[in-house]
Image 1: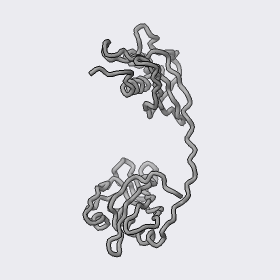
Image 2: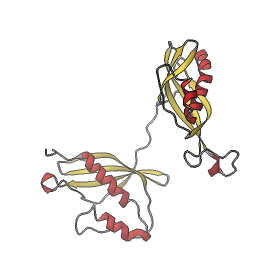
Image 3: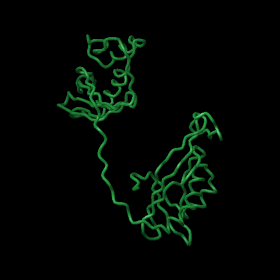
Image 4: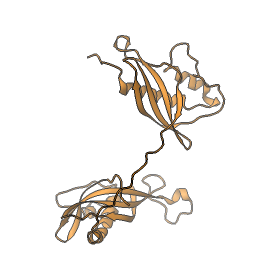
Length: 251
């Protein structure tokens, strides 16, 4: 079935792939860059697309960001990227040949680098009414849960999980260091709570950190993460029924 209009998803993917070549250059790889750019440009284009062959630029975290479609064959794609400490945008004009010409894309003009939008202003949120007594009951349970959740001790983890539930674990990828914050709203026997946990991340991903290491690269990192948990009180104890990313934690 013929596709109607400009195919935005594929056009954005094409522009992001182009940006990965265009935004990275140095004199040492000028020839390689021009040969890679040729796959995106019309015939008889400037092989370096406006770069004079001097200096260097390096870009990472390149992602399609937005698209402004002019008609069924023309659009301008915005691509986000990071260069050093700066987050910026690349505007890429793209032409789409359509069904009759094989559904192909080409960069139709010179790109433009632009500043990225500033971060949004985050409004203040009123803290919820909390249940300090329930938080005190939950803290030792959660400390045991997160320790076994990190280590992968399946039998140990199940002691903290609600009856009839089963949760996967990190299997030793992290080491539990601290339960920094627990926010327990007022409620009944089932509640949605928030927890801020500190993990120790080994120097090689899932490699355990070296105790008392003097080399920062070998010592392991402490990483704070926020979780939202569904907890259920069964008898006189709380148990974890589910765990997810917390979203915004109210301080």
